[in-house]
Image 1 (tube, rainbow, N blue to C red):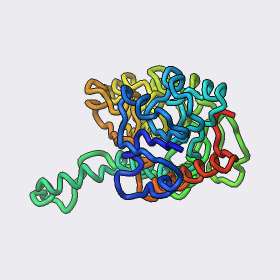
Image 2: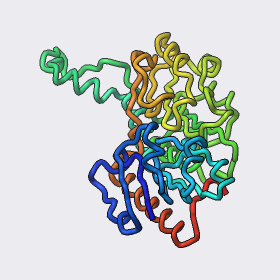
Image 3: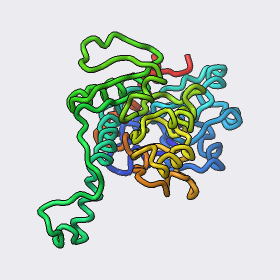
Length: 319
């Protein structure tokens, strides 16, 4: 049995092991695969493993021996799942592996904006504290999180964990979700409409899936309806935010600061407006990249592949 990994490097740049996969069949592992080589590399494969390398219908049609697709991610938009369903090819994703890591980065971005750790550290190294006439100084307005209103758009496992951390900071939380559940155990929490959330929140963080209802959800109209000086955080999917609108809101001061781990196109184009926007902190899609998080992903991937081989595929997204 031939098994092909199309883009292994992001998941495993060398600190994890593919040994478990090599015991299951003839294994070809590629760090990266350009679109022009996908068909050639996958020819004859029964199992294909992919992260961001697309598998659209026109490619899948040329892989008659393909029987199973294992994703190295939660999202599965890179695969034509409907066509796979027609072919009887299960497509399995990696659910709920990065909850803690994404929540952690969410607050890393928030705290960078409210406390300016990197900015002040750099200023100290540049000699500003050494030459300061006072025992302290600050380069931007600093603020506490306690008592602030955090608006959470999307309240699945990640949004819920973000609310837990917000509680530890003594924040108030309002949330929007397509599925409102009982949250009576939470203090300083309530459900809200999207209109209420954008008008009342000091900080808005997005943890929603990307679909027709959420694409460009954070657009010019949305931002204009927010409080002056709002902070915007996005660790969900890049296209949830209209990047041009957010860049303009940062320039005008309507938005105090933004922290994003995802962009509409990754890697970004050089003309992405957020790259030059003031008070915008961008990380290169690293929320999932901690060793423990990737190890958890690899373990679930192994379980998914072995479950398929045992005739009981799990985490199937195209049933």
